[in-house]
Length: 152
Length: 152
Length: 152
Length: 152
Image (cartoon, rainbow over all chains, first blue to last red; front, side, top):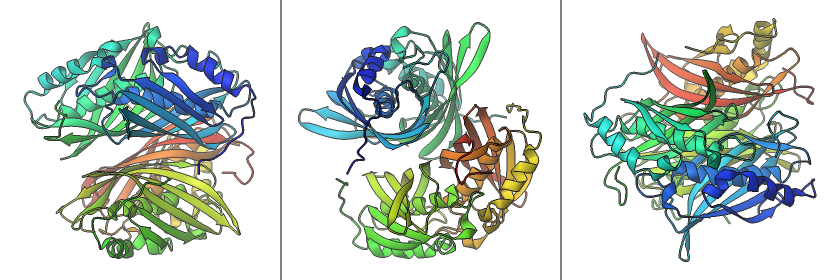
């Protein structure tokens, strides 16, 4: 039931990986790419005590960090060659405490437009065999071209 | 023109500092408390390459991390003794790239209710003498009592 | 793939219909109930020139009005007897102009909690046999009890 | 403390009034223009039973309708001649029940960009001499040019 998209840039997977590898913060949170499809990107990261809030759960902002990257790269995968992606805004709802051994963030394109792409994300916590939905995101991304200092 | 609040918990400053000190992620981003007033908390953090996205700016999720803590503690400062604070949801708008030498996040209570507190945040980038508004947040916080695993 | 919920109030359908019938604005926009299931409510309304913005499309706020009712009643359908539902906040993304002969709003519960219920909504425009996704909503609802002036 | 803007289209007030007058829904809710400044628009509307939800308050979607127009026109007032304004998304927080004799919606530009303008809105309820903040909005607006069917 998910929207199916076709990438107009045949190099979509390479460009997503290259850009992801330049996001130093992804190394800090130990995030890795699980899967890249046109319009859908899945990332994962392990629990780290250095990323927690006062109750020992992963901080909502770190949850946002990985979801924003997943959503941004889902949008980027559908953009033409030469476009860079910027997050204009996002909203996150925190449904359950982010506790678990590892976390999986899925970003998906809901609507890809010429300049604006709307994305949705879900973050799951995994503990043993169980998974739980922790947070949902809606993010608005923009394609930009030839903007100073911005090149994906 | 900002709303003025009175804290009903005389220990508001101490409890905010203690809870902030338990947020390990604040150490990871090197955030410090600049000021605590009833309903208003200001945090700051320096540029770190380890927190950047692909263009070398601070990642939107890290901007969210510090803004969410500033807003959450602004809400917490007005809560009665014994309450813990949870972020239900937030929205962030990214107005300018987060580039600068240091960043300042201000969280303020817009409306404090019995269970729901609405907050607003602003994050500024500082470079030399100049400051620039980078992002705004609206966050909805909840007071919780006696919930398993949650104690501020 | 949608979450499946069970209603804990056997009278969920009756209470949703009764509350909907008391929303005078639903008559103003000529909205009707298409379907009620536990955690999912579908409403519909026809194009009316009296609800348009400057380009002749249905105004985003009217789109929000019907989506908010669909989401609110989806949440309400899962609440215990005696609870009333309040919208705390919502976000709407406008994906396409709201032009069409009639419109269908679907509200669904994403996570039902003791006091907070997170909902998602989609609004479709119908023209002849074609349908188009116009807008998506994420709304946070709260169960309230014994609050002055509020009874669903 | 509000941002001060200069309009680059000298006809900003006339174009806002003309576009507002073409919004048929503004007549349905009996909204009128109170004031137009560059980057700031104030609208008002009276209580009408036909706009209420199940508790007799103005429906959150109607609150959104007037706030969205106030924010959209605040953005539009700063756009160059020939631009049209589209709402990409907005978020609204409901702080108090929308009960009162009349309501006042203020839309303000927070950041005006080449294509994206971020706005903030506040809606107040007035009863006798008292006023109460009912809702806040953050809305993202886009300038569009030469798009089919869209002309402000």
